[in-house]
Length: 91
Image 1 (tube, one colour):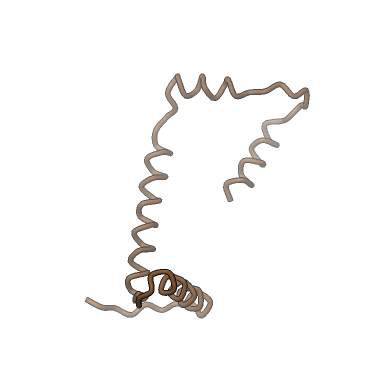
Image 2: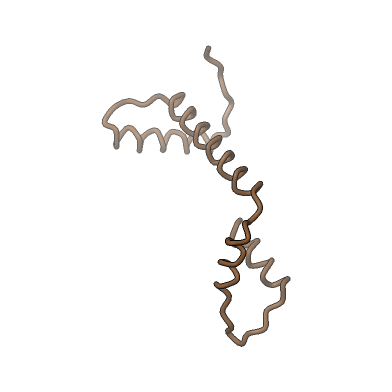
């Protein structure tokens, strides 16, 4: 079954560029429908991966391993600063 999908102009340009890069690498025509299917597969795999990792609590061994990573630098750091740095890093 085929259905049309409306894309923003910028996204259509990005899809066209991606198609061109894939076609140059593969030396064959790759339809945009195939590329979109690949992207959806990647998104679903990433969602499953994140869900598996986020839902599992750390084991005592993992917690102990993380604690061994701590290094005394002599610099005082507040939890709020750490939280802000982590939030910036994962964006």
